[in-house]
Every structure is written in structure tokens, then in C-alpha cells.
Length: 389
Image (cartoon, rainbow, N blue to C red):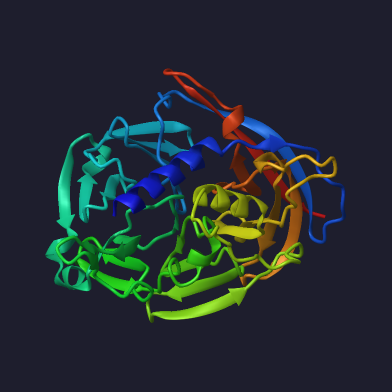
């Protein structure tokens, strides 16, 4: 378990220090459906963002709200940005292990689930936190041998979730007394749906981490999409999208390939002496083609996804390519998960990770261009608007 813990810490440190992006000229090409407009915009929030937040950034959207939730485990606060009026709500929390939280906002009540398997409630967005539910008191959860996911790297997107429902990832529970995991390493559920009021819980899907991603190093799915009664998860290697209907526990699969996905990803090859394994994983991630997670815009009824084509180790000048050379293709899908357009973005970045919805497109955060002080933070975004011809 210590090795796993150190690897996760290494991975999170890499994630934050590699989040810079490079703005470059857009290649001119004809698009089939839209005209695209690119602009860099600024959003200022009057709050202290100097202390590092975790990677678990939730985007919560319904018919009237659009929240983004940041977890500041270093000073035990949760900051909720309302993107409709740019206000910031700060809630104190008790999170001694500095783990990511799962967030759900129902009316004026804020719920969080920690990987301690406890659900806390901030009633009417107050600073007073109360224990709403211990998942271990639910017999079905207790007998499952599962626990709330401990490594929620990218956060999730929740859109128009039915009242009282709460989605989150689960993982197998490590039994220290037995020295092993509670479930078969490659065959246990990936998701849970909890009804906070009735305390009913159900499990869905199958975790992909050990069955497939173990052969591809650091490439994995980074966040999940929950829309209404559906769980939507994406395979970063094949491009396959799985839609799980939680009402009947049936899945539908859609394979949506980028037009630039012309060379299959290669499995990682580890050195025989097992030295510099992390460097090998990083290089494999940098050069390999892969898909990021799916994002939904309820204002346009389009899905968006980033694809990164394969990159050569050396550029035309014989110099090493870096994360600032990794191309980003924005895929636009309709409500039937059909690819209707694709555009090369004017940024080069190893990983975009999170998009934010607008009325006619999306925003992409440019963290290296932002300005941070104890009084305010100036977020810079690449604004992408797609207009019909």
C-alpha cells in the first residue's frame, strides 16, 4: 500500500506541474458544420486561491445553475464558484487525509462524500457541517467490500441529476488484516448511485483500471459524466463510450474515433532492470495517442471530447518534443454520439482535463496565464464558440 500511496502522490504532483499550455496559431482548414471563433477571456474571483487545490474539480450543472467546486485540502476548505454570477462560496471541511471529495448541491444544501465513506451536509450552504450518513450503516454497501474511490483525479460532471440522487466512483477495499483486496482485482463495480433520502444504494459498471489500463501506464479515464439517470464513461484508449442506464442497469456502447486517430496506441514496454519506470510511463503518455473524457454542454446539447494524436519523439529540427507540442483536437458529437465535427485547437497541451459549458461552446482553462494573489484569482480561458454556417 505504501508503494501505491507514493505513486499516487507522484502522479498528482506531476499533474499540477504539467498543466501549463502553449498557445499557437490555428491551422487553417475547412470544417463541415460550423465556423469557429477562438478568444482568450478573463474571469476574476475575489478569493484566495494561492493554496494548491486537488485535481478533483466537480462541474455541477442543472437548468438554472452552473457550479465549479474546488477542494482545498491544504487548508480544509471547499470553494464553490457560481459561473452564472461569478460568486464564490467557501465552506470549511474536516478532511485530515487531504483526499478529494465528491460534491452534490441540492437546492441550497451542499453534500460531500469523503473516501472515509461518510456523507456530510452543509444545510442551506451554512458553515455548520453535520454527518448526514455513514455508508457503512447501509448493509448492501457494507457487504459489498467496496469503498468510495480514493483517487478521484479529474473530478466529475453532473448534469440535471434527479433530486436526492448522488453518483460517485467506488473502488475495492484493502483489508490490512488479510493483506489483500476484498474483491477480484479486475471484476468489481465502478460506480454507485445513492439516494440520500431513502438510503438506497446500487452499483454499476466494471472497473477498467486493472483489466486494460495497466498495460498503458499513466493513460486512463480521468473523470466521469453523469446525466439524469445515466452514467457515461469513456475509454481513453479505444475511444469507446459506455452509457449505463441506471433504471434498468443496461449498457450501450458507442465507438467514436477521431479522424486523426490513424495509428493505434502501443502498450508500454518496461525496462528489464525496472529502473526509471516513472520516466518510461511519462514518455509513453507524452508520445501516445489517447482520448480524454467526454464532456456535455446542456445549453447546446452537444458532447465534446479532446483527442491527442500520436507525437514523434523528435520534431523537424531534431529537438525533443515536450508537452507544449502535444496537439489537441476538439471533437464535437451530437446527442446520438455521432461525430459531426472536429477542429484543431490553438493550444498545445498534454492534457486539458476539464471543459466548462457556455451558451454556444466551451471554455478551456489556461492555468499558466492566470494571475493569483491572496485577494483574488484571475482565471484565463480559451473561449471556443462554434456557430452554424
